[in-house]
Image 1 (cartoon, rainbow, N blue to C red):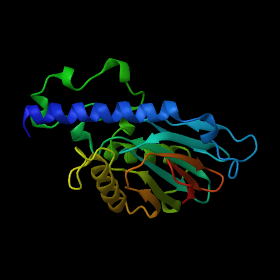
Image 2 (spheres, helix red, strand yellow):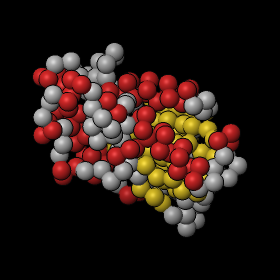
Image 3 (tube, one colour):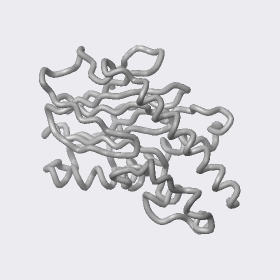
Image 4 (cartoon, rainbow, N blue to C red):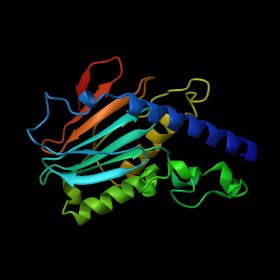
Length: 223
């Protein structure tokens, strides 16, 4: 990969981030909690792009603006403890905020990668490989038991046809990376709503483990 290609990839990545942040801003508050599934007085925790939250019932975790990003939920079905990560990139080698950059990217100036105004509080949740490891560690610290954990994922859309072609789109790469990691961890993937060309918002209900997907221009879907 040439320096020019690396910078182009990062520029397109920033465009995707800006558009997904616009999706967040345009989402009405009424879309953040579906009254059909909401539990009275249940606290809602909002998970921003590139971040993660681990909590327990009766809390609800919401995340909006999923385009090529993928939301992964991991849930302890017996103890009703769960976590959600809003993943932006397939692995830490694609972004230095998640870990070490690869050799080719190390030749590119830091200014091509960093935007101080878009800092993420918990960068380990930004990339698939570090995000799933972070979720599992925090779930364990809160009392979750590995054998009772199940996973679901939502997102990974092909939002930009000129860049996200069927072979190398960020959305598809995110999905492939997450599936490989879950398979390696022997984590059952029991539900998904992925791909397509549309954005999504989700709500994760810790009382039941349900994930409600609200796709733009489509009806709600429970997985």
